[in-house]
Picture 1 (cartoon, rainbow, N blue to C red):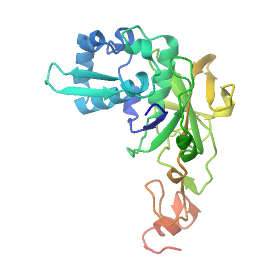
Picture 2 (picture 1 turned 45 degrees about the horizontal axis):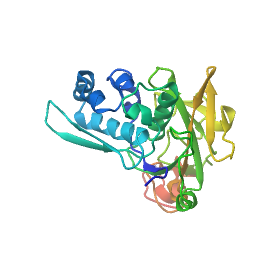
Picture 3 (picture 1 turned 90 degrees about the vertical axis):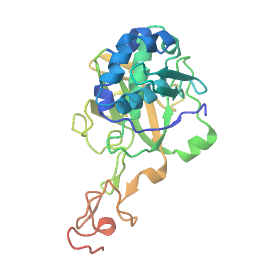
Length: 275
């Protein structure tokens, strides 16, 4: 479980109201003292629901801590105990209670952005980049083989309020679609993908540079600021094509062979007839 494989499902609200700069964790870290801070309890119980707060913390801890480590916290208001396992190890000093460095802030922000799914459909992704030691996140040979499709690059800084950004690492054909619409999009730089506050910058190549081995996008620059980035890849079956006989949640009825007018998979609108 030390590789970069994980499942996305963080809501877009989890980016805009995650509280990383206000819940005390920015300076107190994920240590016992940090989680015991009054500011963290206020944040956790002050969101729309504790289920939402639990979801955000699930991804924060999974991004920050390495596999095999967990954080356990008991809500002093409700008495409910939560256990959040680590996975990627992107901010291990912060996880031990130190104030988050700029590099850790950037890696955590990129990681949270990579796990956003606006349709609420859980899709496994392969995360590539550097961990807190500067080493590449381990990717097993089986993971590399099972996740061949290039998807996107993510970068930014949610702690500092500098924004969070995504670029496409491949171009979708008009007949293709994916539930990872916040990441892999046919839209260009600045176009609205419906994933605010995640901002689309166009292609990864237009803003980023690869690592020395050309395995992933290492750094991306926007507004004159250079950020540590993360790269994601998908399974082939998670990119859908109009014409495969299945009306996917990303496809619509119509008279054509494009994802938003897919007669073969979703019928012509109002007739139930397929071509």
